[in-house]
Structure formats: C-alpha cells, structure tokens
Image (cartoon, rainbow, N blue to C red; front, side, top):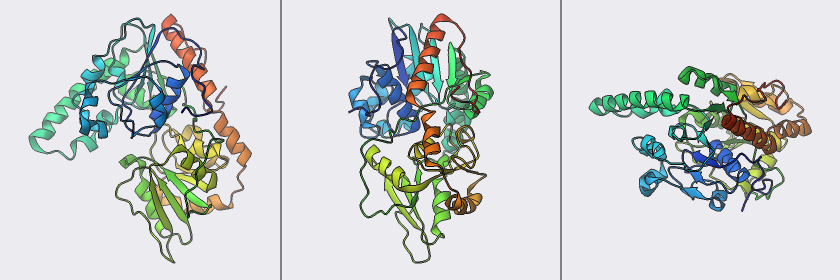
Length: 389
C-alpha cells in the first residue's frame, strides 16, 4: 500500500520521464526520497541495479522496478557495496529510448547513466567510496590494496566526467553543494528533500516501553556515530535510549540501578516508528549527515532534536526553536540536560517540518526537469533562512 498522504501521479507532467536510482537494498533517506519521486511521477519505472524487497520500504512492491545484472548475485543483493567492480558498467549500459528527460537519484552510481536525452541528477552526496574512501581500502593490504587504489582513481575520473555530463545538478543541502563544488567543480542548486513519514498514519506501540525515552534512528554505518550516543546514556541514571536501525557492536540492552537503559529494536515498520516519535521526549543524532531527515521527522511529531553541528543539520535545525546543535559527542550530556528544561513549542515544531512537504518538493523537481528539457534557468534559488520562499 502507498503512504496515505501521497497520491500517485501528483507531480506536474514533464513529458516522457525515465527515473534511475542507485539501488533499493536498504531503508535510508535516499530510498524514502526515491519512493516519493516514483509515486509522484507514477507510473514511472525505477531503473536500478539491485532490488531487495525485504531490505527496503515495502511500498516499492507497488512500483514498476527494472533491475540490472548485479541483482542476480545473492551476496551482492544483501550488501551492494560488494558490487563495487560492477556498478559503473551496470549504469552505463542502461538505455532509455523514447524519453524526454532522465532523472538520476544518486549517491554514487546512477549518474553514470549516459542517456541521449537531458540528464538531471538529484545528488544525495558524492560517493563516499571515492571521496571518503578509507573504509574501502584500509582493510585490504599489499597488492590488493594497491590494485583497488588504482581502480578507485580510475573511477574518480569517470565519476567526474559523468557528473559534468548532466544538464542540471541538484543537491539536497548546502553542505552537499559544497562537496559537489569541490569534487566536480559544479555549482549545484539546492532542493531539500521532503518529509514523507506522515504524522497522522497508523501507529503500533512497542510492548513494555513507557513514553519519555530518547530516540536515535540510523543504519549501521560508521559515520552515524551511534556508538557515541549509546556511551553517553550508559551513565545517565533513569534515562532510556531507544536505538532504531540495523546496528552492530552495540549492547542490546543495559539495565542497572545506577545506569541508563539502552534498548535496540532493529529495523521497524513505519507504524512503530510513528509511535516511537510520538512518545519520545526527543531525537538524538550525532551522524554527519548529508541532509538528515530524522530531525525533521521528529519535529513533525512535535518533538525536538539534539544534532551535531555539521552537514545538512546546519540548514534544517533552528537553534533553541526546533532543537539543539552540539559540536560533538562530548557536548551531548550537557545538551541532554538542557533539552529537558526548554519549553518546546510543539505546534511550531510541526509547522517547521511542514515547510519540507512533498507537494513543494514535487513542484520544484518538476520545474527543474522542464527547465532541463528547455535549456532554461531555474525560477527559484534556495536560501535556508527563508526556505521555502
């Protein structure tokens, strides 16, 4: 079923559209945005490398999806990072006959598509495996390390050529705009993604969990810094942290009379996530996010956030009004104390999240696609101080 607040086919018509996304094998912010785009431009087909229905959002089952040859490799479907050697050719081989414009939702791969029609890239981030590559080469040694390093150098050159082949380059935050400028020399336009987790949808409580806990939401990636949040809570008597997402290296629970309580719940449905947002006292995130939807999702439920002063949070978190910004994990204990004494305006928090709504995102994305076809300039420019003006 579709999220109840999104009707299929609600975007402005843009001609014959092809839509490409890196892979559908996780529940992340990029996948939420891709889902929103696919629904808005229904019945567009999502062309992608891998589709693992059990690992991504169930609503994709209602959308036409075309996969490529990496999808036939089971161990790659479980972790697309294992397909590093295949992905470039996978997307370069895609063909889009009879299309007026091609939209690539990319954090590293889909913008390798080389259509004959104008290409618009919506960039979630330049590929971390090229521009923050330590995690890819540090675990291999000797000859393998040298060979992989040379291959990544080759990929970096190809990646820059592909990016510069776009008729229009869009990014999700001012932080990513700067990364794109450094990586590609492109002055991209900022189009923030929408909040798609409806605050009035169905909810499912977690049995035995009382309201008043702190919440953190994120996948198992090092840059999410979930471990530092857990460590901050273990010494906080009487407080509970609920950790949502597939996490490794974290305690499932920590119960003691003089310590905090840390509860891992793994991946959850949107109904459970809504209940968690509704009943938490605030969201905590130390992730160095490209945009970061979770603070806005918390705001949509009238809850504040504590976020690191970095990445997309600089655009979306209004200090003292929608949350608190901290300089790093060492500042987190003081922020946890401070968030409890601030009187938060729940209606103001919800209104802030509503500024990032799907209708506005679909309208501006449609305008960008039409401008790319007509080789005209965008009629808007992003300013985080007045967004969505």
